[in-house]
Amino acid sequence: AGLVKSLSFFDVDRAIDLVQDLSTDEDNTERSFDGESLEAMEIPRLSKASGMSSRSRKIIGADRETQRKGKNQEAILRRRAKKREAYLEKLQKEGRYNPDKPSKPDPERWIPKNQRSYNRRGRRGRNKFVGAQGGGTGFG
Image 1 (cartoon, helix red, strand yellow):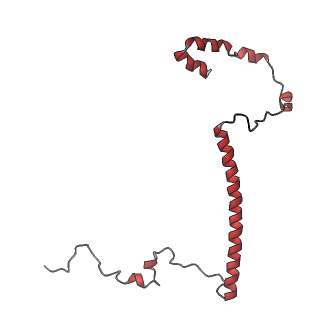
Image 2 (cartoon, helix red, strand yellow):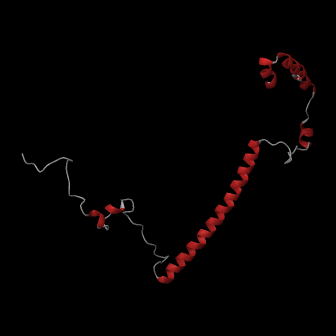
Image 3 (tube, rainbow, N blue to C red):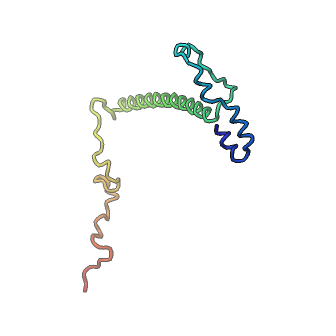
């Protein structure tokens, strides 16, 4: 029907021929469908050689890629867990880690490093110039 519509703009004769070839709704109403026979019918499958659209190929390819990424992600997480266990075991042997008494996180971790209380290097001239930018010493 879309082809007929587009042809009607520039090739009216061909559009009329195609309209006559199209089946009407009256032809479809003569057939009655039985639900059980429809369920028993075999589902048509597309072979790889058939003309699949490029969009469906992309979707299938993306699905396969996400499956591969998922497997890779799982492998990465397993590897990371193994490395973490080995590292914690090494720290335990050296006496720098006790799993029963975990260290507390730094309470100043949200403050910029140069402004933290234990960082003396960045705190040197912090309160030198207080006041307006061009403010003098008050002579006048």
